[in-house]
Amino acid sequence: MIDERISVLVVDDHPLFREGLQQALMLEDDIHVLGSREDGESALRAVRELTPDVVVLDINLPGMNGMQVMRQLKTERTPSVFVILTAYHDKEQVLHAMRAGAAAYCPKDVQPDELINIIRDVADGKYVVNGERMDVRSLDQWMQSSVESMSGPYIIDSEEHFVPLSPREMEILEMVTNGLSNKEIAAKLQISQQTVKNHMTSILKKLNVEDRTQAAVNALRRGWVRIKDSSTPSIKGE
Image (cartoon, rainbow, N blue to C red; front, side, top):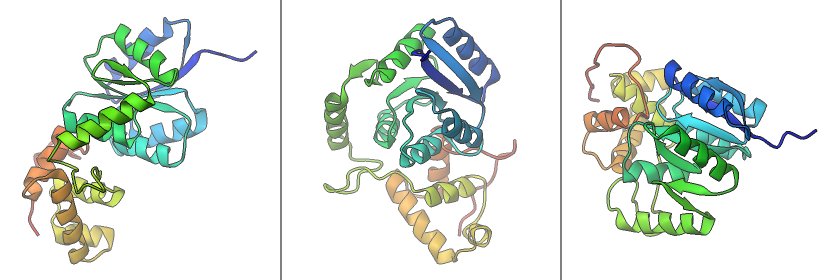
């Protein structure tokens, strides 16, 4: 007998939130919870293995962040759809997530009933942004109008409006945020210091910030990277 329930994987590193969400979902007759994961790498493996209909995915995860996980799986053409959860909510972040392939974007304080309805909507092929349900045409129109109204992060030119950070740039940004200098990053990645400088120039341009400290603060605030220990690192220059 074919199970017609919506299969869901929950990915969040906060145990109380993760377990509470699982329990809420398990009360719904039309939803089947496949399990949960607490970090990016295990989430990547679980989605590949279990192919859930819907992945409820926190952005701020240990290791790979949620955006990186989603982009990788989208590159692999996984059939799963993604509901992004985040504590940081602004127009650029929403646009970044939806352009990267999310089906919905929600603040982490979303009410359980609302999140459950969003899961049903995205499983049915709809998209949800700021509480608004859209089909693919409406989503395309929303993204286009959002891009055209912005003049800050990710806006490059009329041909290539939106350019997220590459995997290498994300790797370098995380190292910068954890206090490594260009020389240390070059040694760690076995690339030249000039290559690191070139990547940093691209990162600053995409994030529309003036220096590496602003880039690090931006990345931390949005949950893209994490500090690896409890100390506050100094952001080193070149």
